[in-house]
Length: 258
Image 1 (tube, rainbow, N blue to C red):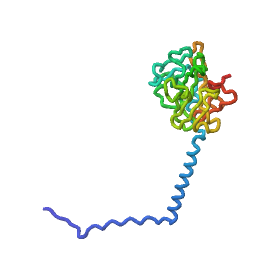
Image 2 (cartoon, one colour):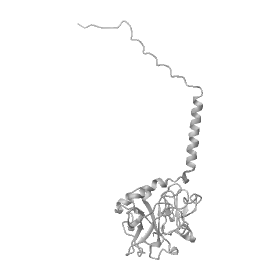
Image 3 (tube, one colour):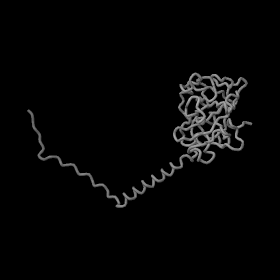
Image 4 (spheres, rainbow, N blue to C red):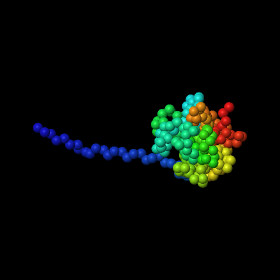
């Protein structure tokens, strides 16, 4: 036998939630003032961005235990832009594979594997190796034929290129050019210090933030190009992303190691 069971009255309706606590009438105004203050502070910090020494913090990525204690032979990254020169040691006597007025990408400190180096995306260990044009001594067959600039612009950290990335660039492009905001860095023409900004926003920054860091180069007995262990401060090879001083007889290939 089945039995139907029914309630004599419906269940009580759920209680309404309590009303939210009242807010002071001045809260919206305070909130707006706080927001506007935050915007002003952030805007002020951004306006100072080119002058903040971020590189002094980031240079640790290429310093300390990562810097070899001995000169390291330059082997170019295996990358498409290095063409057939990728993976090769750079020899100052080899004008066929390493002609004047040409640029290549290298990694320092190197892992020892040019393929692995070529895949490393960290711009703070990337350097543009430039064999100077003939009129600046690019056929002297010595370390002074070359300069190696950091790939991190001292303005806002874009990646400059020699000759605007052109192959065998014409005279008007024989400078190290930043594609983002137009900063130009000298490669030594007109007796200008190597690596100093000659145009654009980096030029108007005060020293040492107006010159790009670079490596000190030398050769072994066979003519293979080598990197002298850098000193990462503004009086020597520079601070990555920040700059270096160029006066007081600074060596054109970096600094003159004693």
